[in-house]
Amino acid sequence: MKRSPGTRHKGWDRGCGIVILVVLALVALAAILIGLSVGEAKRIEQTLNERCGEAPDFVPAPDGSIPRERVEAFLRVRARVYEHCPAIQERLGILVRLDNLDRPENVPTTVAIRERFGGLKELFSFGPAFLRFMEARNQALLDEEMGLGEYMYIYVLANLEQLHELDDSGFADIEQAHIGNRAREELTQILRNQLDAFESAEARPADEDLAANLRDQIAGLAAGQQALPWEDGLPSMIADSLEPYAESLAQHYCKGIAKIELMQKNKGLNFKN
Image (cartoon, rainbow, N blue to C red; front, side, top):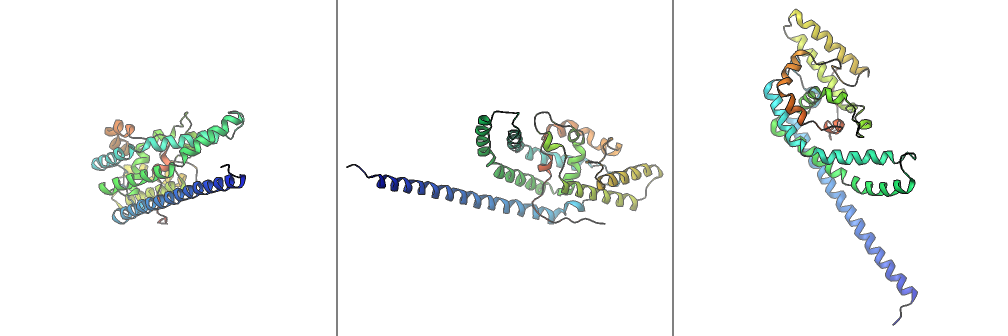
């Protein structure tokens, strides 16, 4: 029996309604799963902060050197984090390509539309990948009893040369600011803590050059005159403590994602005056 047009439209509408409900259910499920992952990442980070202290509370050695066992603990953390780096790098690369599609001179409009839809599909997986990255980093730090402040301090100093380089493969716009504003502010406070420790210790006269240099780094960072400390090279005591591990540190550096490497989920800065 031949169906009337009205019957066909009703069937079509019913089918569309089912598809929409399925899509909405999948979106709701994804939101729940992401929400659970966010909560777990924040829980681990909170435990880390309670056990090892907030990031800006970390106090380096007065001369800035890093003990051998702490560099080795850092490398164990990096080995676990490094497994998740390619997924983040890939998705950031997609983000850069999507940004370039907004420039008409780069690609024809039809190609840009097709690329944008394909890229957006991939970007939907960025959130889960980012949360897995954060969980892995925080859990590794917790296992090594290394706070975010100590991790940040070693990360920046160990990768200082790489952070100053801009990548020609598309990450330049992301990496140009080197690290995020919060990480920079916390790093500045960490250097203030180091200066306080130096001034409280029995300093030798020769150490006064280091103290003056440290004050210059703090002033430059606080005033926004420099993105990173020690732009002219690390002091010898810091460089000597990292030099035996130079190859391993370089192997575990993830190019172009420094901001994400040092991100935190929990809010609240604890800076000293």
